[in-house]
Length: 269
Ligand code: ADP
Image (cartoon, rainbow, N blue to C red; front, side, top):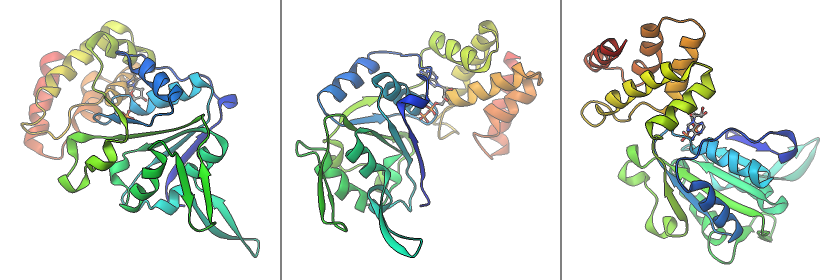
């Protein structure tokens, strides 16, 4: 399979650190308890994946994560017959495993996947909670502890690549954004080991760089990139070099825009 799949069982992981910004943890718990699927919307690197792994661990459920891409088909999620040791055997995909075994299946950037994925998701995301496996002739009913979580980034979606209303209206949905400054400072400090005051300066800088979004930049600087920047500074790299490598270069290839970003960096550090 070409997709990136991560199955983590509750036994072999601690609860990943997640700093909540609102009622998202309570919302997740309610959705899980009421057997409702969840849609997370928000820019890249703002904490969606971390949130899902935190909640899965908190609920003590296995997590099946799939990073969707434009070649991902329904069969990548449900499973396929594979030749193994001269025999043809059916091998469950991550979605089927989550339905059979119970657990949380997280489809990251679901709009990237091929259209046939929707066909599989629809019967799973209404009150039937069914997963039909045409190839094996099975019709699986999702257990109470199965939950489907999907995410996408509305910021850079092409009109052809947004979720259709008939799909999105099957989910409880929440918008994620970059955390408020104090929370983001704490996250960056905790993840990088850099002292909070220095992280606060990076968070302030991020706010001014994020304000440039739309004019010249498709996306604002993610919390992930701030963590990278703080990690390099904590490791001893000069601040401006770290900032160029993490807050400027990953954002744009345009030399003029890079210069504008570097000016903002130099005004702060
Ligand atoms: P997304 O899935 O939205 O692209 P991630 O969940 O991978 O983003 O977040 C990127 C990184 O940012 C994480 O690895 C973590 O270091 C940090 N992060 C962002 N938000 C939070 C948060 N609320 N609590 C803890 N870490 C966070």
